[in-house]
Length: 180
Image (cartoon, rainbow, N blue to C red; front, side):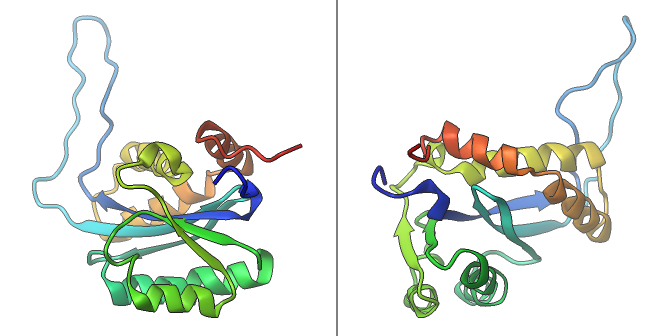
């Protein structure tokens, strides 16, 4: 990876979000307890995303896990058309989830003229999109969305809050610093 220009790298990953997300910490006046609540019956969404040094490339939510058909559709519909147009020399980098290592994924990426790389096992510290998920989840906890519709709307706002400076900082933090 040391020889690769970080400006070509696009990291893909998925994260789970739920309708009972709440802030982890709170404040209250001295001597009083801070109160909060989260519903016992909650719904889960899977968020698929792609991040480059220029910011978020694509995001999609699904009400299921990341299966091969879901991931291939995300690639073909959301990620690859954008990258072909704006970053035709992109290198897609993802973890070792079985849905990522399928032949259909490789064919889709290579068919778009892009390169595919995999991270080493158990290496979230070298994936800038992990920090992106962290920022997004902090915003979602603050939003305290309790329905799938409000959670999806809050996700749109949280994703829009990710700046180019954020993305560059996360890339730099993970060691992907462009040569000057």
